[in-house]
Amino acid sequence: MDRGILHCDCNSYFASVEVLMNPELRGKPVAVAGDPESRHGIVVAASLEAKKYGIRTTDTVYQARKKCPDVIFVPPRHHLYSEISRDINQIYLEYTDLVEPFSVDESFIDLTGTIRYQRGEFVSVADELRKRIREEIGITISVGASFNKVFAKLASDMKKPDATTYIPRERMESIVWPLPVTDLLFVGKRTGEALQRLGILTIGDAARQDRSFLVDRLGKHGGMIWDYANGNDQEPVRSYYEEREVKSVSNSCTYPKDLMTLDEISDGVYILSDSVASRLRKAGKKGYTIQIQLKDSGFHTISRQKALSVPTHLRKEIAEVSMDLIRSNWNPGTPIRLISVGCTDLVDSEESGTQLSLFEDRTSWDREKQEKLESTVDQIRNKLGKSSISFGLDAKASYGKTNGKQK
Image (cartoon, rainbow, N blue to C red; front, side, top):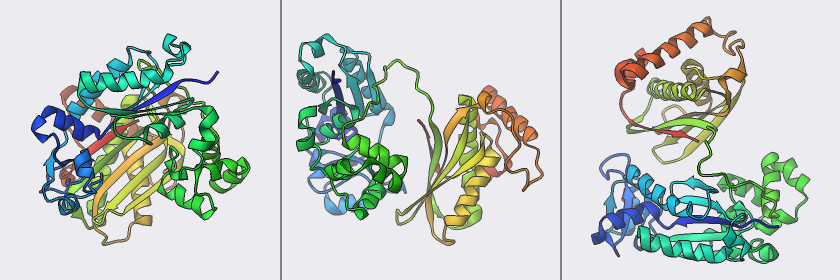
């Protein structure tokens, strides 16, 4: 029996919450962005009225104001968005515990085992939820309904705002296959360009290929695309109360002044690596893959990663690999406004065992001593606060605002 999956997506969420908190903004072009005078002036959400002027997320404050001189900028209040998100999910939980937040403004719901689904009231629950969120919370949501998570999310994007879209299995080919392949979950710009070079423009084009062809060209990601295009997504919706496994840890920093030299970049990388390493140890994890991202003053992004032979949770190792990646890929003199450092492909620290350092042939430092040093720093910070102690390099690069992420 097909499952009954909903994907609920709050419309223009950050902007909607700001309008909810300040009714005087209702009906006006509103953009949620950082301080327009600082380097954080990037639009992260826009009201429907602002979108009519062409304002989109990732626009700079300058670009948004150029499109609409009357746009009203408000600073983001993430604590408020998280609080209202919890209230919204509490309404979803009245129907089932299989509620899986996908982001602060999106959640999947699996109604398959509920009485309402058995009664054939699957889609009507979507309409009911839209009405309840609108009346009880004060914002609107769009809901996609389908037999798996991928198509439910696809459906929620098809009609906005405040709409329900249903994709049943028997209408999959007529509704889904004509859509651009980039509408499919996890098919980004680069993958879309790679598929386009193969002559694959629509979801149907991908679905009609031999699965082995896509695997040969795109690896396991190609197999996933074929599965998704053919409606073969079997990913379950996890319970809201299930403990989430940490899959990656990253930290980024946007600087108020461009970094111009390798020394400046190195200072930033060591601070970010310290944060990532500390959080990995706190989670009891080590990472096999280290990732970096650089964004220059023109908002061009470089993303690179390196797989390690042994996993790590040490600041020194993470920083050294990150700097190797940067030296190999950064064009000296290019102004850098954002750096991100992260670890993924995580394993439990206990399971990774004690192995020789992958740096042992390049440096003379003792990994065991480094483990003890960084663990001691963790203990002091836990007792006296994060700012109670830092590595010597940190004092040189205390500028900039970091943004830690854990998935």
